[in-house]
Image (cartoon, rainbow, N blue to C red):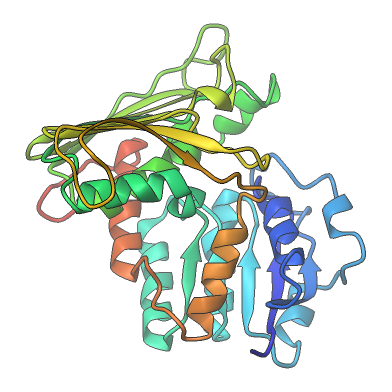
Length: 343
């Protein structure tokens, strides 16, 4: 298969260096034609000063990237509020995209991007890394195939303690605070699993010692007919990402995962308890082990290549991305949820 010509616009998203790293590990799949430096942006950012991950790559302007013969795709890795405007310029030029998260604070602008990609038949992959998380994929299978029965509760958190004193100021740049920035990951997964909720209620809070307007202690409750979902994310807890957890409780079983992810190459494990056996697991409690993952984003980059090459359909539709972002904006306090029409 011919290599996909791809460029990256932006080094200032928190995931930007990881995405270029994943692309560089796939030299038989992608040809990286260049990188656009966006450090002169006026948008709030929390990354972009370390250029070591881009060593040896070609720096170019956005115009030069768009003029590259045979360019097929772009990884959009600008700061959060620059993502959708940048992606719109890529869409207008007929380019497939990986666009990082979250999809901005302007729903109408994001809908314009989705509609344009749909009309042009362009791949648009959003940077929600939990989509390709192996234990969470097993949990999704357990829910969809009825192993856990009717789902009654889902509890998930994305807590951390990195970022130091500068992180609250960064979160203060967004009305939706940390729920907008990090809670978007599990919300995307939950909406994929359960669909449109009945109600979405945010409970934003600050923490002692910072401006009370800065939401870095977020809680959102997402309601379905028989299911309560709680999403928590706080940046001031004692332990870092190792405490991130997913618990799914149903009438026939439970699934528990902590931490949510590891990408140090070491194995992971989840706890699966079943009241009834199925084709894969007997009734009882199982410790399910997973092979270690050494790159957080490579599976997504591989998936994107399969979509661009027409080997698979995008597992996440334009309609899903719209609904998920509706819920994200409501959970972050930007909008009020209307069960009939979305946020």
